[in-house]
Length: 388
Image 1 (spheres, rainbow, N blue to C red):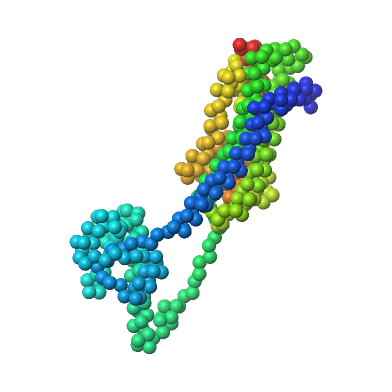
Image 2: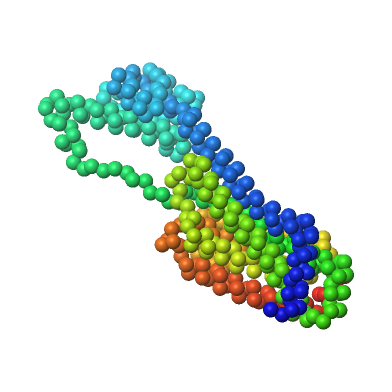
């Protein structure tokens, strides 16, 4: 490598390591990834367990007394009843929100009154139907036994069981997606704070002019700066990926919400995810330098670069809207990287679309090269170099 580029890299890296803010963003910001995953996993897990533990029985209004069999069926279904003598009294009880559905019996005819457009009433309606269906089966079985027919021979012609498959869990997908958003944001913040000092900071202090008095080309200067920022971003990417994998592995063994979720943490998926992060680091480093180069002061550069860190939140909102990765999104940097890592770690390798990966990486490389070319051209301009 060119000696001037190496000197520039060493100089910029020393500056980054000496600057407490840049060092903090490079090494400490990734700690937000496991913090977020553990906190939200704990909150969701606690809330789900609370719902299960405190699940109340559903009250159904009725106009008749349950016999012992009906009481047993109701108990199994976690269903309570409230007795009213007339249909008008049942309707009044419904309007007073004492129950969300009621059953009116005349002789051997049952009518379930429920509002299927309202969630609680719809659930009560389903429960009431289940109770009557179970009671109907019991009566049928009893009559068959009275005439000497085995109920099981008539109704047990097909044997079946349910085998649950591990797959996508919207709750887990949300936690992992936001964890990856923080991982990508850490890389962005590392690049932002490093770039702010090496561009606008040097302009403000006047050290850039002094540095240009040495025998160094503008292309060598910008390449050295770019690679130094990229190296710090790559370090952040590796730390973020390590913490992401470790926190997901630990959380999946700690919390019940991960029990039925599929999480792909083999060597290949982690390696590809790290490669995706690296491609993002190369892109964001160049983008930050390009934006900060137009700034006249450290504070102005920070203001100009801050929106970049918020762009990393876009994939989280796309996840909420249930917008999935496609060919068009694969061309969008920042968004495609986050969504690709999410897909990689929550899908099997056979289900993962490697075409999206190829499009994202190739397009990101092209964007990075174009940005480097733009920055090199910008640094030949005295207006950019000495805009005070």
